[in-house]
Image 1 (cartoon, one colour):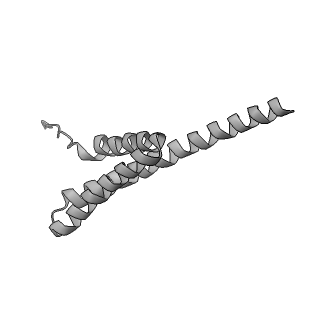
Image 2: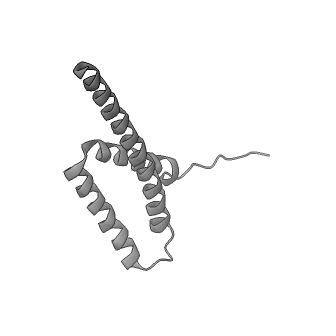
Length: 96
């Protein structure tokens, strides 16, 4: 009986870890997109850009202190946002 509870506890721990990874991955993707929107549109005051930068640094420190799996998911999501929306696309020359 005790062995079965150990397997159940391990299974639940793995499920929680995967859910945390997926959640922070999506959160990192959203925050990365939002940050790119703030930094690429130059209409906001510089104070807002500084606040976003300091907020992301604070999130990274919090994830590093409390959850390494969360830090990995956040960084993968933010990196995916930068790759998807941050890199300018090369325009193809069309010869008509």
